[in-house]
Image (tube, rainbow, N blue to C red; front, side, top):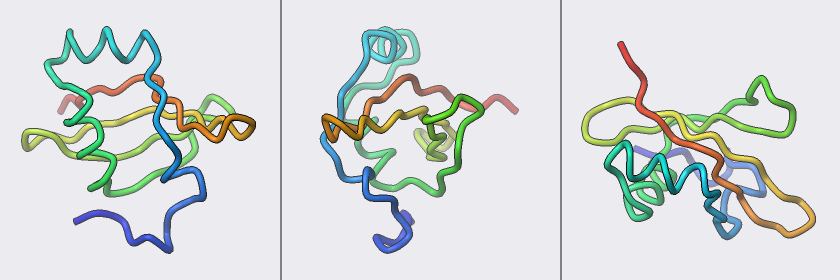
Length: 89
């Protein structure tokens, strides 16, 4: 079950921009843009990252917990996806 719409920041629904880094990680970690969009649509939480201006999105993919690092671009109104990775136990 995803987050409720009223619990989401304004940037949540902005158009995505995928960085070269996340495109490489998609190949390395066997997921694609559809998987990424599905994870974001059904995200379980979000919190500020240690890097100012970035956020950690908590999600699930293939029965595993994942974290997606995003950086909202206020000027362009884009949600820049920096990276995504499965959480190791």
